[in-house]
Length: 319
Image (cartoon, rainbow, N blue to C red; front, side, top):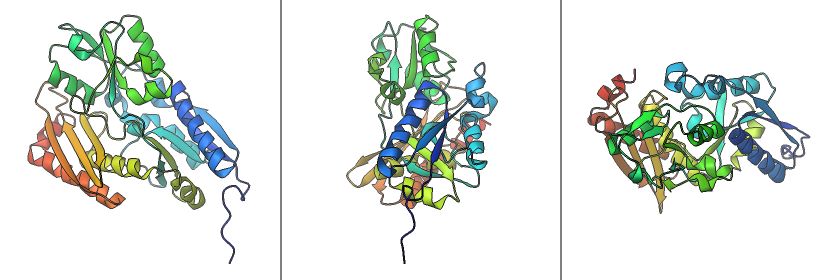
């Protein structure tokens, strides 16, 4: 019996749906190059503007959350204009719509948050009442826990827009994902990286995910060979925490998993959206993990720990 055709032998052309920000295009081109190198197939990009890119005058928690960045890309997959979509995994809702799956998670970039400021070398140097820009409730509650004196103000737009607003003097400092700055060749903008003990990252931060139609079996199998196993398991543990607590842009939740030998260590923190200075709920759990089910079970264990601490009351503030 002959083996099924590979992507290369099938004569198939691939199209990647992507947002049109500079960072999103970098990510799509990175995957484009990997596909061309690994499978020898022609790969095109389909640039799209999402609702999340269009609505910049309100926080994501007030206009529909992270799904605003992926819905248009999923429509392109559904109607056949594209074969796959490349996402910053922290922007992808925890539950994908029926008919779509996460086919691969690539090797993870630095998952930490970055302190960016033209004037101050570290958060410790910020004066009392300094203006810090971020629209992430996760960052808001962690900054407030460390420095309740800071004025934390909304900051929307793509990475270049956020940097421009900082340089114009609208903020004393801003907090961004280190991964985005690294990918765009801007490491010099990072004055200090927050260690996880200072600020836990978002679930999936620093990881690129590739989404496809569930029925595209050949493409799913091919893309699975690009997946980084360590990153795949870590982000599935993190995303299981968000799924278990109904995580969205309106929930100030952090989840970060890292490896020590065969054991996956998961750290989580939950804040109160209505009272950002309220003490954070925290949990840590670790165990050997060898498959996706084990990673998700680790996340479920962390969720159970938070619930025993009163997570339901904190979540009610985000409803």
